[in-house]
Image: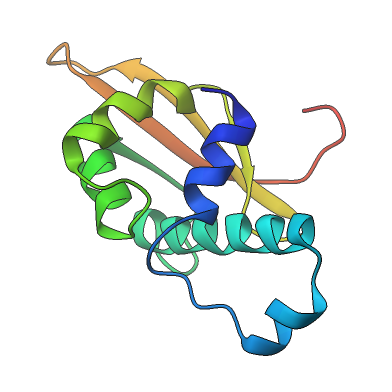
Length: 123
């Protein structure tokens, strides 16, 4: 699964509400981008909080967050999708996004560092 595939998962989140005006005025591509950013922003709020900058979470917690916001239909599906997040940059607004980095924690389990970063053309 590539960047577009992950973005489409967030865009199809079952928890997103788009106004009727936006449905009428935005093109399909603009609507998909907006919904993807809304989904990533919802995930950011749950993972990092309102003003959070960085966190480390377990694979189980990551999968349950994806399921909780409606990005995947089950935590098992979330665990299948999570490896595709490694080294990914997803926008949650026009000027910043989230980066994901997989590593192994002290117990030998997979964990993920999620960091909010400003937009950069070098990414």
